[in-house]
Amino acid sequence: MRALAVVVVVVVVAITACGRIDFAVVPPDAPLGACQAATFGTPVLVHELTSTTNDGTARFSPDELTAYFWSDRDAGAQSDLFTATRVSVTAPFVVDALADLNTGFGERDPTISEDGTTFVFRQQDNGNHLHVASVTGGVFSDLGVIPTLDSGNDAQGYLVGNELYYDANGDLFHSVRTGTTFSLRIEISELSTTYDEGDPVVTEDGLTIFFRSNRDGGYDIYTATRATTLDVFGPATLVPNVSVADAADGPSWISPDGCRLYISSTRYGGVNHIYMSSK
Image 1 (cartoon, rainbow, N blue to C red):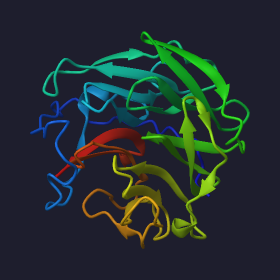
Image 2 (cartoon, rainbow, N blue to C red):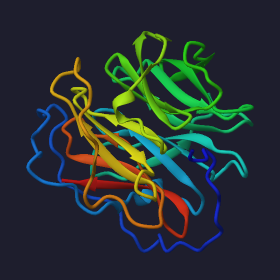
Image 3 (spheres, helix red, strand yellow):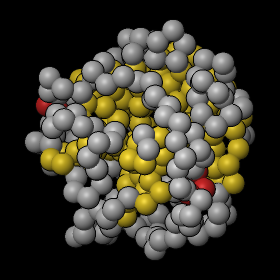
Image 4 (tube, rainbow, N blue to C red):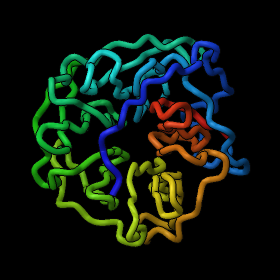
């Protein structure tokens, strides 16, 4: 199984030469499928979310004006949660620590509901546990470990609609959400192998899933589809262009229109950073 901790490799990464990402944006209310004829391009570093340490698991509000991610930049040996905001999709991000939820234990893998009221994250307190927080007036209140899901090794929660997708011990699961409570987990067994699967990211309509797996050696990004949300997912296939050899790559967020896939990757010097691939 994949180790959940990221090993920090001390390197000098030439990130300062990279410019801010500018890209054509399909309106947030555009129907899913507006860009489905194209494949994802080569991922580009999201410069404004990048530090000289590890950064990862960037998730966004539907309008892509607010991002949540984890970073080691201020925490030394532990990770903290951060938020980044911008006034438009072409404006620069302003990054700030998410102080309401950061502790000395290490927090990662943030995800927020579409209405902005429920927030799930991983805390590394004697294991890996998914916590749920309520969000009211910009204040995040940690409600504690999600008891119905806790195995002691849970990570990469992803909220979409009334469901939470996540990984535990190298397999993929989902749970139905009602407010800040969650049903018992259900394994997505059709995507399980004897290898490690994790980092589930699901499109807004629930019909396409992206995830990482080491089934072919390194950690690469795969996808699978289904006809309806009542069906099982079909066979997984490698997503072209977004993974590289000798790196750990995993998806973190897909835009509502399906046109932009954000990923975490160690492709430069073994340090984890945030990238975006667009169609």
